[in-house]
Length: 136
Image (tube, rainbow, N blue to C red; front, side, top):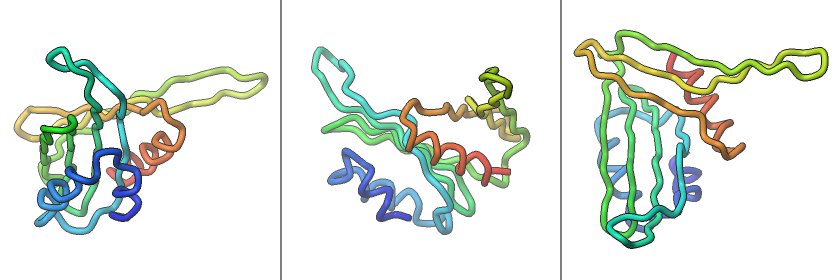
């Protein structure tokens, strides 16, 4: 699974080792998805930004990568999860109804929360669905 993540990362040449270090004590990777990956303006310069979420056996890890000079890592322990809220969109298509998971808000026992957002990219959205199903 790490190889698939490495292939998807636009910034893997400098961010993969930081992500691997963050996962050192979190157990095996179960799922991951790319929430965002695009060019943004930062301090007057165009930079590439990626946001990657990783679900491991013991934690959820968020990597916020801004090329070429920044990787922010946040880790959230699964044993501290207090509540999970799921938000769906509902569309009527012909004679059927399509329900799509759009956002998941995870609240921890200390009161802080994280929000996982469905990516626009179809392939990343499939990873998002798997990720959210495995959370519980």
